[in-house]
Structures are given as C-alpha cells and as structure tokens.
Image 1 (cartoon, protein in one colour):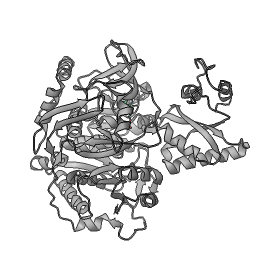
Image 2 (image 1 turned 135 degrees about the horizontal axis):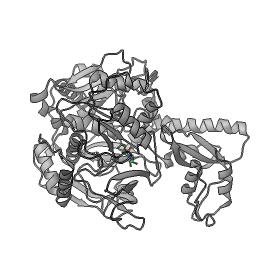
Image 3 (image 1 turned 90 degrees about the vertical axis):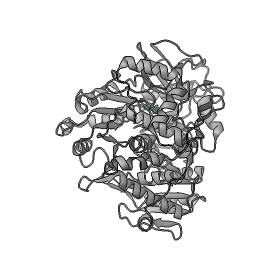
Amino acid sequence: MRNYLIEDLPHYFEDYKKSIKNPKKFWDKIADENFVWYQRWSKVVKYDMNEAKISWFKNAKLNITKNCLDRHLSVRGDKTAIIWEPNDPKEEAQHISYSELYKRVNKTANVLRDMGIEKGNRVCIYLPMIPELAITMLACAKLGAIHSVIFAGFSASAVASRVNDCEAKMVITSDGSYRGNKILDLKSIVDEALEKTPSVEKVLVVKRTQNEVSMKENRDFWMENLYENASPDFVSVIMDAEDPLFILYTSGSTGKPKGMLHTCAGYMVYTAYTFKNVFNYKENDIYWCTADIGWITGHSYILYGPLLNGATTVIFEGVPTYPQPDRFWEVIEKHKITQFYTAPTAIRSLAKESVEWVDKHDLSTLKVIGSVGEPINEEAWHWFNDHVGKKKCPIVDTWWQTETGGIMISPLPFVTPTKPTYATLPLPGIQPVLMDDKRNEIMGNQVTGNLCIRFPWPGIARTIWGDHQRYKETYFTAFPGKYFTGDGALRDEVGYYRITGRVDDVIIVSGHNLGTAPIEDSINQHPAVAESAIVGYPHDIKGNALYGYVVLKETGESRQRENLKKEINQLISEQIGPIAKLDKIQFVSGLPKTRSGKIMRRILRKIAEGDFTNFGDITTLLNPEIVEEIKNERI
Ligand code: PRX
C-alpha cells in the first residue's frame, strides 16, 4: 500500500488544496493504488446534489472481502486479524489469524447460501460482540447479501420495525449475551419481534451463553451444526461498485428509523483511507475501538477499515466497569494496544473513578488515542490526555456520522496540532462549509453556522432504504446543492472546526443518536397521556440526558404520577430500548406552541437546562401563559 500520510502541516495544506481542486484525481489515485478490483471504473464520480444522486467508481467490479481477507493471505496469513476479548477476564481471549478468519467467513457464507440467501437479500444480525458478529457480516458481504446489524440493546419492537423496513429474509442471533454481570436473552427478544415480521424465513442461532432457548421448527437453526458441515471454500460474488453493502438504521426526526444504505466500492475506499490516516496505522500496531459493531463506528473502525489495512483489531465483548473500573486499562496493557478509540461518555464515566485504576496499568504502548460520537468537553479531553495518553499521544477527536460512512473532520496525528474540544481540520478530500439560516455560505473564520459538505466523498450513504425522497429532503433540501449534516459548528481563528451539537430533533445520549419523535410516539401510546415533548439537557456523564414534558388526559394524584413515570419509562424501554429512558419527567398542563401548532422546543430546552433568560418574544405563542407554569414547576 502506498503511504498517503501527510507528513507535516504545510504539506497538509498543500495536499488539502490539491484534493479539493481536483477531487476526482485525488480519489482516483487512492482507489487505484490501494485495492484489488476485478474491473476498473469508467468514471470516478457522478453526482447531482439537488436530486441526491451520487455514484462513485462507476462500473468497477469488486468484493470488499477480497480486500479485507484474500489479498492478505500471502503476506500476513498468520497475522492476527481479530483479537476477541471476552466479557469475563477469566475467559481466554481468542486470536484469529487472517487465514483462520478467511476460512470461518467462507464456511459461514456457505451456511447462508445453503439456507437460501442470495445476492441482494437482506440479513439482519442481532448478536453480541463475539467473533461471529464480524464473521457473519463478512460472510454476507462475500456472497453479496446486504447485512443490517441491529444493536443488541434494542427492544423487540425496535428489532421488528427494522426487520420489516428492510424485509429481511433471515435473522442471525444468539442464545444470549453477556454484559458485565448480566445475561441478556437475545433469542426471546427475536422471538417476540418475529411475531410481526412476515419476511423472515430462517433464524440462525449462535451459541454463546448456553441459555435454554426455544427453537421453532423449520425456522430456527443452530449455527454450529450447520457450520461444522460447511465447506471452507467459497468464491466471492462479484459486486458492482454501487451494489449495496449494508443498511444501518439511525434515528431521524420522525418515528421511523432511517435505513442508511452504504455501497461497496465507495465505502471500502473511504474507510480504508480514513483508518490509515486518522490512526496513523503501521503494520504491527494493535488497534482497539471500544464501540459496538451495531453502530457505524464499529462497522467502519472495528471491522472494515482495520481489515482493509491488514490490521489487528480488537473486539471487546464487555463493559468498561466490569469486573472493575480498570477493565479498559487492563485490556490495553494485556494486548499492548497502540491505538485506542473510544467515546466521551465512557471517558467521563471512567474519569469519575479514582485515577489509581488507570495508573496501575502500563499504557506505554499507546501512540494515538481517539474520541467519537459526541462533543468531548474540555475536562474529559484533559483527563484523557493526561492520564491515558500521558500527554504524549495525540487525541484524534473525530467528527462524522452514520451517513458519512467514515471520519470527515479530525486531526491527523503528529501532523495537526490538537486543540481541546476541536475536531480541527477536514481530511483531504472533504469540503466542509458553514451556512447561515438564510442559506448563505459564511465565509472567513471565527464564525458559527450550520455544517454542510460541499462535494460528495466516496463514503457518503447513497439513500435511505426504500425512501429516496426522505433522503433528499433530510440531507439535500435545507441548503440546496450541499449535504446538510444536522450539526452546528464553529470555525475558529485558524480554521479549526468545533462541533457545537445537533441543530435538529436528534439528541445524543451517551453517544447514542436518539430522535425525539420515536420516544414521543412511545409515550403518547400510554392511555393516560395526551401529548409529550422531549428535549435534551446537559448531563455530567451521558453528555445529554432526556427531559420529558408530558401532558396528561386527566390530572392525577401525585402517587399515581410516580407510577405513571415508571410506566412511561417501561413503555419506552419496551418499544425502543433502555437507552432511550427519560431521566426527568415533568407533568405539565400544556406545551408552548406556535399559532401553527408547532411545539416550541427551544423554550422547553432552555427550561430543562435551567436557563430562564432570552426566551424571545413569547407573546406570539398560542398559549404564552404556559411558559411561566412550566418554569415554576421545573424538576
Ligand atoms: O452530532 C454529531 C455527533 O454524532 C452525530 C452522528 O451520530 P451517529 O450517526 O450515531 O454516528 C456516531 C459515530 C460517528 C453527529 O451528527 N458526533 C459524532 N462525532 C462527534 C460528534 N459531535 C462532536 N464531536 C465529534 N467528534
């Protein structure tokens, strides 16, 4: 592989300028020099930002698994591809070499094919962080099936809505999942979900916890029985550049999750390029990203990005505080981790513990440490820098989204001077712009605005599964000709970017993207509830927590209200998952609304934050008197 690292900052600017002056040439070169293709492309990029139609590497033929696995066999067949670290430190870690992984993927691809899966079919994967999660994803990619991983913390109805949306033919799950000292019964959740999913024909069940589970005849099959008899040879299916690789659901401003569709070639080129550069990856590094594979971070930077570079990547099944709050630091020492990529919420919760937990471990192998998923506050940044990086490891604060496929704005280690809370500069090839509310581009520095991207990049999601119109409206309509991220950002005096947070109805709680609409939909289903509004407010550890304003059909006694709060959270847990539970619930007699009936969330947000200043002109509201009431009864 050619080294496309930018050696120092002047070179960064030089490279950056070149990359945006001629993006086609820039991406053409990267795609050409770093991958194996069955057939080269006839056109680098074709796009119409108004119609939201984007394609990269037209007519190229490939299979991403050839690039993740096959091509490494001759040079690094015995090298460890995956280190699997189990939940319980007493259980032995697994080291899976590239050749072993290749074999396991082939066998699994044969299992899927024998079970009727063909190119283009959708397979939902609802598994804990075990090697089979990575293996089944790669097996899908190898045979051209579209995987859709559902985070194994989602509830039965969240699973059902995703399975139904993509009309999955198969679901792959396990008999259970270990998380700290808990065992989650994933199979029962799948069973409940599958009562409402007519498209699913077969369920494959991986053994992990040896839990008793019920197996439905002719629908449910143990993976290990099928795997044992499967052939270790499988010829990769030849995929077109723009054939779908996977669907991954993310929250939006309506109750229905958005199935972001990523395609083969562009996603491959982009995740490989960003992984190598952002983590300053070198051949013998041992890289660990603590995210769950059920989110985009895990897709791009546990699985595809690292394997495309022939790296050793860690899959960690557990949680940061089990059995003790030094689990992360223990794993870094044990496996001699060189790059460590985690989330601000994890950093904040571990920073609350005594620093002795960190200090008792040897973290000297670390070279680069990273953060993703939400803004990292100054205090957490310094703690991470001082105690984990020991002030010698650059922190890559990486800004990106499920929709972008890979990292967009981030320091390049040893190149870009870092600045706490700043994601700093766009990667070469990426063109961020700030727009004001009147759709004008904001030029110059020391400005804030809506963060948009001017030119497409290979990793951008191509559509929302089954709803291109929604894709176009969500991302390409607010600022015509540009991709709108939904985030606000600040550009400082030297041009560094700092993400200030969402400007839409998405709230990031512990790094999880939650839409207000689906949560409100759940609450409103409670028979006692008339309507509700959810906002986020700052929280020490989670970054944001959820504050719900709930209007009841009849005002009840306070004892009943306490029960109601529990029932509301129970309902949310069942319909979405425990991550979406409300921290605070305030019963109100009405919600502040504009004359057209729109809830004034801005005011509700301010009240939840305890900021009673600058409400703006509330006299134009339909019910201005309600603001005072809500303010006085704030929790
Ligand atoms: O608001 C931004 C925030 O996370 C959102 C994307 O969430 P999701 O699609 O779940 O992907 C998360 C992992 C890439 C963004 O719109 N976000 C992500 N990274 C950062 C961030 N906010 C501030 N700083 C970051 N480094």
